[in-house]
Amino acid sequence: MGLEFDYKDGQTPLDEEEKEGLKIKSITTQGELDEFEQLNIEKAVEWTIHSKFKLEKILTEKFVKDLHQRMYGDVWKWAGEFRKTEKNIGISWAQIGIELKNLLDDTKYWIENKTFPPEEIAIRFKHRIVSIHCFPNGNGRHSRIMADIIMESIFGNEIFSWHQSNMVKVNETRNQYIKALREADKGNFKQLIEFAKN
Image 1 (cartoon, rainbow, N blue to C red):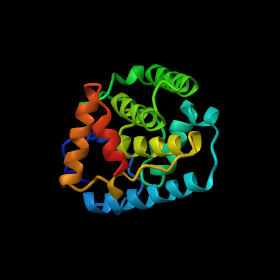
Image 2: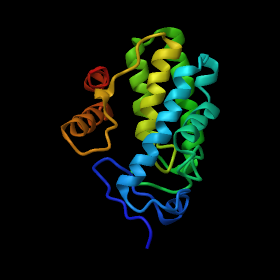
Image 3: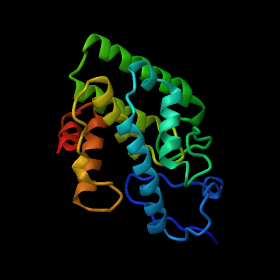
């Protein structure tokens, strides 16, 4: 039978093959999975805190994949690999590499030309990488850490607080986050920036 997931609003269902990629066979519930993922993510966050990354390194496909691998590699075999299936959100999987490259190039341009304030650059990056949906799972948390790395390593600013929450639990915070994302879908980033800072 295996693991049954309880998907919340804004989460992407995994297909059967992706579920097969679970490395820890003792996991039977969503709660246990969340815990294992959280521990793995904390290790990845430690790594980002103790490393100083250069702009040239961060804005590459390799870095985007490496970060996901560090966040989920203890839990999922496919961590750090682009998805190879269509999802209910995100672009066609065959376009991921191209669209990510466009985003990385745009972000370099925004930084060099100071097109937007630092926090807006970080949040625009976060929003667009989620809409590309590079990976089978973990895109939301991955995008938030990428935004923090952009804030800290590229701009030397404080990282976002993201309401001090892991956004997995269904509550007012998650609802606010989803609402802010939908506003950003329309090109209005103010709510998402506010959310990230609080």
